[in-house]
Image 1 (tube, rainbow, N blue to C red):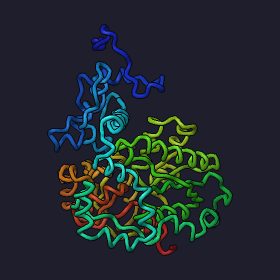
Image 2 (image 1 turned 45 degrees about the vertical axis):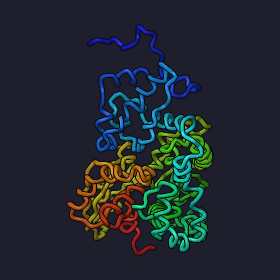
Image 3 (image 1 turned 90 degrees about the vertical axis):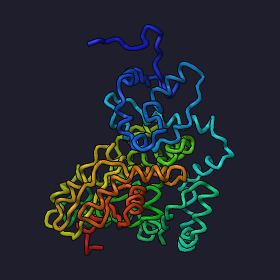
Image 4 (image 1 turned 30 degrees about the horizontal axis):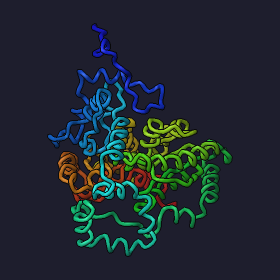
Length: 446
């Protein structure tokens, strides 16, 4: 086999995405890109948009151009949906999404006008966490105003947010409001102790403690998901802590707002590292949040505690599957329901695509059908942009068809924006895996 590395005689220099990261050498993997296009064939945007050059160009090829000349980042990098399928598809483990994140950040910083509609639209979508508290203070008024057709029309004409989608409703009480009213950490500790005593376990078991990263959407829009997590974990004897937290940063990465993401990550790493010091593992109910903390934080940031936080963060269902006999707990439980399940791209990238069907199969009366490995197409803020809406729906067509072919009229997923797309494309009611587990395990205890 020829061991020759292309460009070696010409003084090929290692490609360093971050100059300060001295150990970052992308040369071995990047060289393998010369003969490979696996990432392009797995990119849902490239599949339906002939003008999008694909993740290979956005990653190693673009960095080669920058190394060889004073080349600007191509504006097509903003068409990347940040589904991150290219990472899991790459046979050479090239950190493609990391390269895309830094390329987007450079493009926004150096090439995008800070006075443009696109910049302010993207900044607003990226910083939902800062805007949501205003609407959540007056949820009924906010829901009424955002439901008006004129509001949707203005959103499209003024900000470039598609008017084809209905804005998600705000809950009348946030999860954190419910958590405080319920008694917070003190109440959770007592409930967990009572559950452990009933199960014959050590009441003071210090290992059964988790810190819940609920994310923005479960706090402001779907607190029922967050409540379900709390009830399921307490039922199994876990003390739940809810630390202070900022946005996970996922929408900021996707829009090139890397400095905003850095500020959010700094808060999260500090608070979550403190929770780990207090004996907790970190769990997230949103697959994009867990993906961000586990992969993107250590790739992009070097705060003290970043690696430790990443190593101790879990998807909520994954954690129970690994640390509990979850199938055993579910044996003898029954819930009536037929579900069309979509595994989010960010769950697949964590190797979690098969776990929901496997876990829920232990519940009597439930039929869960996986609707395939296609992308939903919305990819967070991507499908909310006017210029991306049609592409988003084309990507989602396969999923919509599989859902409609399934023997189910209820959708199931762990990603809030995938949930939006599933409901938008089919009209089905969509629920979260944790809500099904709550119905099976907790039921009348509520």
